[in-house]
Image 1: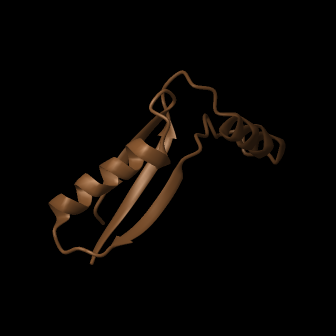
Image 2: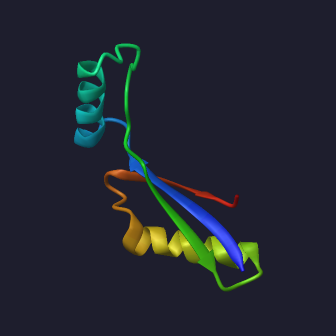
Length: 80
């Protein structure tokens, strides 16, 4: 089994309403030191393989086919 983490975020210049609203809420609660907030979605996966190279290839495919929209998202594949 191979464990993989995929972090999906928004490309630079794409509006992040969730991050903006969170920052505003933190400011209203008195956390003025927060300069920015960006939302990131994290997928934690366990793959039934022992080959990390094959796992990376499959996860890349998953990202391109389902997990991301290449027009607005970036992603990072991490093997913890």
